[in-house]
Length: 398
View 1 (spheres, rainbow, N blue to C red):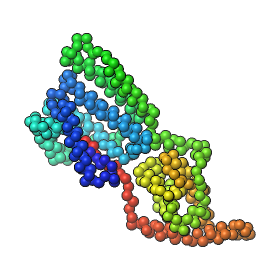
View 2: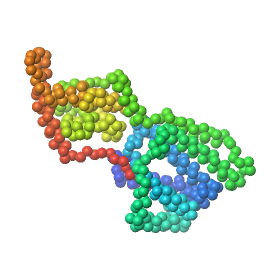
View 3: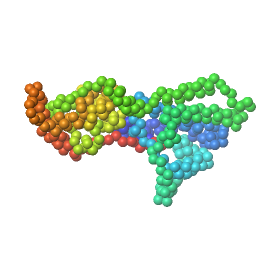
View 4: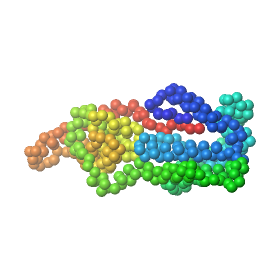
């Protein structure tokens, strides 16, 4: 299993928690009868479909949980590691797994559970698993071509078949319900429980209705990220959204004054940011504002978050997204970075008559055009040796 809360719970504590969860999981498996080979292989002979029901229920529960947590911003789906799909090795491995399951009566997890309570057949199965692992590891150079054949990458099923996530979730739940009804009828017929076949009861109808309602929730819990990014493509929505603006002169003054309450969120390209990054600035793309790092930065108390981009519209999109995500003290640089460059960094004293009210402004801009490049250079040298910590997908799973 992967870390529970990366960067919050330490790796050592994760091992302890994993051990406790593993013991609990094994206990539940044993109490459910999954340490008995007769119950497990009942799936293949038609007299007991508990395995199918358990795995379908686990999959559906996890799927709806992920959709709901992602919708409410409690889970960053981008950080979930998706095992890469290698088609032919998956097919061959599935056949070997299925054959081993029906012949040996266990899968790798249930065999350990059976061995733990002293069952000899479970112990033999565990030993066989280790021998299989050894053969594969030692013979990997020979199997590598097959193992890596037909690589599909880190795919998701709904993307592969070209439908929406919500529709896939509903269809999977509908399939699970249909499978539960069908397998119950098969069990009754094989076990001769009733000569009249499957009896419809209020309990089955109620559970079916509940499952369908749960499936429909997938449509009212659309992907929050996609919805918000779609709203940002509506320029009328962006234009009507009220966000405070900071002009170039105020930003320049606060940079020179080394204002500790100022945080700059730079939405320019990585190339532009690396070539000229303002002090107190952090680089993000619009899509990255959903990430944990952005959340930590924008949620710091008593900080003013100023969004900048080459143009004001792009900067305002980032500011609107941050505001919609629930962050406060959001401002946008008036005119964008292009205006800041023109008014401050590349300021040239105008020729001709200067009206009295502009004298002080032009004097400040002239001074800032010399001071801020020095601050930018110092900031670049300061961070040249530093490496930004990035949140990565954690590897895990069974």
